[in-house]
Length: 363
Image (cartoon, rainbow, N blue to C red; front, side, top):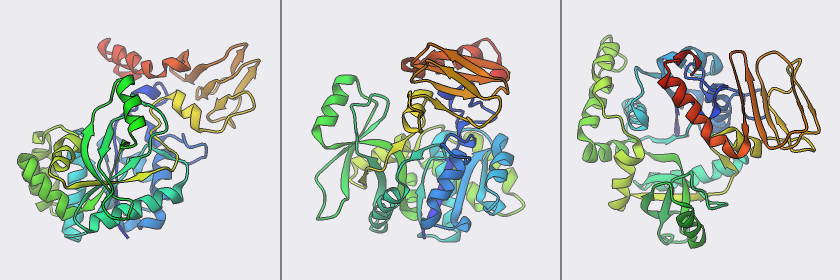
């Protein structure tokens, strides 16, 4: 049994107006079932761990909702970050808390807002990564690319070591241009970086200390007070001083250069639910290619001569379309979004403009 860490942060701006800062996408049922993305993540981890070994790191604004959705988790396993400091601080805090319980434990870090089409194949890939972690490697779960995707980072891999599936990671690559993405796809050496990590907590914390000594010192101070009456005071004082940086930049890139990172290629129907278009690609559609979220709600939707729509009716009123195709329609009580599916990534620009206008209540 591994320890599972689920970073649950962000606001999912490309899924606005459904996903908001106060109720982000991982709390929504975007799985094609009644389960939220967060609940589906915990369920998927069930055969690999236990509720006692599952930790969620989330913001203060989301603690109540997370606890309500994950009532099987012990209360002390929901770690609260006072403010967003990006993924490294959140994951390092969980690693340090786990290390206090079990100094050489293997932990896996898995985002709260991903969809996995084949959970058993995913679990087998994670089990293979655990074997690498037990050898002292910092492991990632790489995704075998199915297209020349420009929206993801990549892992450049070397030749497999031995007969197993593990491949050394030579370098982390930024999101590429279209031409570079095509070259990555043809090479057979590049995997999508899904930011799924597996390692021994002592190995990770040692590497954090080597590359990010200030961040490590802050996390160590917080962990030292964890579970004591000084916990909240130390957390509130030290947390705002921690560098705001992702774990990829802070640790994994430098560790790869030092030959300490390996990956296991995975092919299990992964999707990061980045926008409504990609959500429409992975959820069940009707015979005309229309995907409706919350389709059982009344009065729901009425679609006539319409195709390839993604419709999200959350306002409580009827959403009707006639003679349209390739659109996203998201109806909430205080905001209505309509856009072409091929402009789904641009929804973030609406959120940015609302912030500039000071309309924080809508974001």
